[in-house]
Amino acid sequence: MIQTEARKTLKDAPIMWRRINSIGIILDCNSTYAANLGYAKSEILGKPIFEHVPKESWESMNNSLKVWFETGKVTNRRITFKRQDETTFPGLLQATSLYDENKNLIGSNTVIFDLTKMSNEQIREYQKFVKDANKKLEEIKEKEYDNLDKNSRSEHDGLKKMFEMLSKIDFEVLKKQ
Image (cartoon, rainbow, N blue to C red):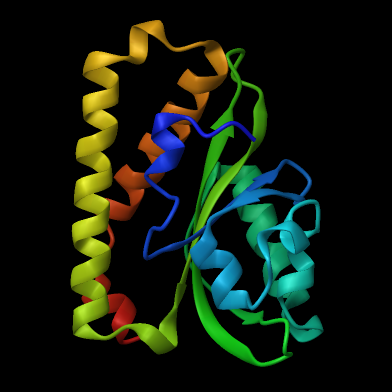
């Protein structure tokens, strides 16, 4: 996928990010997502999201998809994730919908927090990243948005919605989950 300026905010982000299509196939992810799961990015793209959860978590993941289809978002959904080496970790999933220019659902932007890594230092890093990313997206909106093609606008709008959701997270509460 083409790296828009908006998407570049996620390249080496401290958060695990992936984009899926409307049937749960991974279209893109950042290096943090790939590294935390122990895969090369090329091994992830085109795979269903169920490949990254143990079988006993498929029902939870499926319920998450149902909530997303019904509401357009998922917040604070606890799901166990599986790395390539078969080890697991508790994760907290947050997702927002991505729409095309005709308001048709085309996928989601999903962020997963590894609950085993919720240190105070990590929380500060997440908070700074979300704040900086929101600022960057505002700059794009002010300076470049009118000149973006429809796909780049959709990308920007979807990420803006995701970062607005992330900015409302109380990470101290997440830490205790």
